[in-house]
Image (cartoon, rainbow, N blue to C red; front, side, top):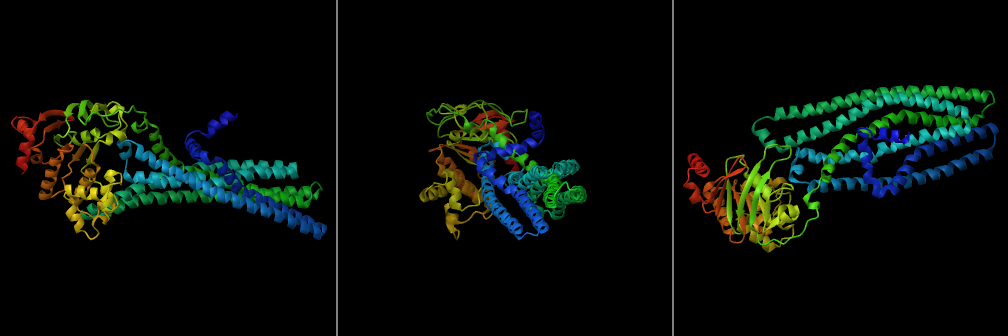
Length: 590
């Protein structure tokens, strides 16, 4: 019997509700005590008021002052108990609820940071914000007021009949029967309210995504005068939310109306039956008042239990989205594996039948690549758009977590190294040149985990041809970059990103179109710097400007994820091959 009940409770989406309580496990005892005390206050107060009313009635019938004083004293004692329960329960409940939700948010963020690049970048950025912020806050309702209200109603539903049965078994049977009928009636409203709550959370996430798109693309939207369309898209999502709120209000109104009518009818029937018992001498009047007070709380709890249960279903969608992120963290990640530490012998990079496919894609993005890159070589990767250049660089630096990538550095295989240790060999600058909402100094220092000294930062900036323009700024290196580097030009952002790479002092530097936003003079200066870097580093570069790589030690030509040519500029330009064709195209464009 209990096994079947357990299976029913955890069926469907309810399993996510119970999974959330896993986070309460480290704090279960104090949280459970606080939750119980806080939830029991409704029952204690109802019991105290019912007893007080009954005792006062008995004192009035008997005409005894002593009985009145005794009733008041008993009530005062119960009031003190009530205050202790409420104060203790509320303090424990709030403190540990907040601790639990902070643990959830922290675990969400750690899982996001620990996951592979494909998991981290999967979906929309607005969805990631919604998961860590909105969904976590919504999921807090699992431990929030709806749970307290639900448990409070359950305690009254269980406790009130016990009190009534102890007074009179006949009234106990009558009240329990009425309560059961009322509960079955309330269940009819529970499912549609829960479904609307779940849909509201999904629509809210979609609205956040739409708003994020509009805000991030505000410049483009204004440039193309598409504000009306953007507003229409947002209004459409907002309209769906209004419609759901209207539906919920209608259902909740009918539930509340029927519940109110049901409560009054139940009270009338119970009071009439109790009155008959008093009139026939089978029950004392003051005991009827105790029963009446407890029964009023009982039917009110029955009427509310359906609504509070529906409220508990609302955060399920948010909880599901949270576990969609956390469950990815259960997949074995290279950073979590036990690796055999092996010291690299130099920094020669070898690709041995390197093959890679994106998750969910049957076609390989990289096909059996074989290449040797010696220390202090400058190697350029070229090819048409979509040939796999950026994918190759991101794979080489260990952003994609795979168990079967054929790569090694100094004899240490990628599969025998943690992702963290592997990436320590590289400094990377990509096309976006992502800057954070920090000062210029802090952005550059991130290349060394935020621990770079001022002299190191200045030296790296000078080599990246950025020191001069930084010192010309009013606040110099303390100038805030703004969100996504909004306060800086594209060229300035790229030079700061390059300085961040140089301050790391990694043996292998990787530049993916790192000069694409620079003017001609700055690009020439940066490329001269990059060429000089080969004396201290291995340099891997992807560039759209083939004239920048004429002195490269190796030029690797990619097509459809495969290497089709390898050689120097002099060797490849003399052939009638893929590189020669790329040169011809660029000359025609120029």
